[in-house]
Image (cartoon, rainbow, N blue to C red; front, side, top):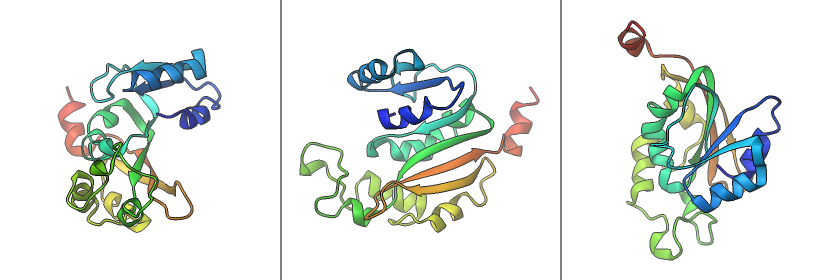
Length: 186
């Protein structure tokens, strides 16, 4: 999670903030910037040991991780970490057109060989998961309308002009009935 996001979270009264950062350099910068106000863990969110239940999980990742966040973490790790009624805010690539336009700010490599391209993992994720390359509020609403685990709370564009990134806020409803019978009864 970045310093901008963390800065907003530490302003919440009585908030206990834990940041999981895979990059050792960025983890060190977070620890230096926030001191004891943030528990910084250097590790991979997919495997790091986290205890307890959280009121809010913010997934502010690189483009490379967005498919994993939506396809795996929301239904698995994030769901288990959130208390019932808790919130998750996940960053999402919202516009393939804007992201692949010449001069677009988003890239995940140091050269043009690693830029977003038709047929790459992100292109395929958007088509398979969202059903489109332009993820509008209507698309997100439709995706979560019948979801028994989360309800859509809000969608916010990161940039007002030529937007590429959207923040999606979901509220955990609780264990879906098919899972509640299986796990809660034990």
